[in-house]
Length: 191
Ligand SMILES: *[C@@H]1O[C@H](CO)[C@@H](O)[C@H](O)[C@H]1NC(C)=O
Image (cartoon, rainbow, N blue to C red):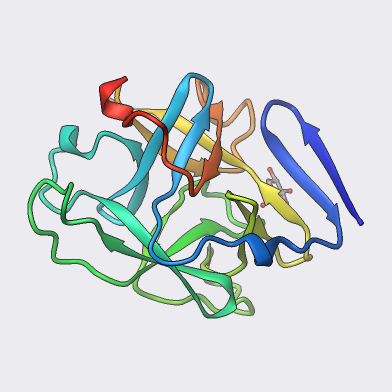
């Protein structure tokens, strides 16, 4: 049985037995943020940090929208979408991560190193990404599912940093978002 509780905005906590995996997206897919006035801004890569929005506004030739495939232990492996990148990025096969619940950082990003759940020194959790329908959630070490994505404003009105488990006092002006594998009906940068 699935019990779904919506807490404070789009912060999501799921309990019970979840048959989420059946609905996981297949093939390479993008992830798009929705909520707080953000209407399907795609996750992109820059300097190992996950951003959402318009990668063209980032002063980084390596910046590119990310296409994901699923890996072992529910990892998400990212590669640049060279059709819409600024130039030809040199990075490939980067593991997507959220900070572990014990980490003080809220940064969501990409790493070449697949984390070890038992390594206390490693603050990045690269495993346990599951989908409820098209919605991306993360299963933490205690087996609970969370969708604690937030968008934090940057220098550009069309770029937000994607963060995890941000609480009110941490970062002002952040908005809760959901991350979905479904692209918006109209491309974000044309809205
Ligand atoms: C979120 O952060 C709090 C501390 O601020 C921590 O106690 C909690 O475990 C974190 N939750 C997740 C799912 O990381």
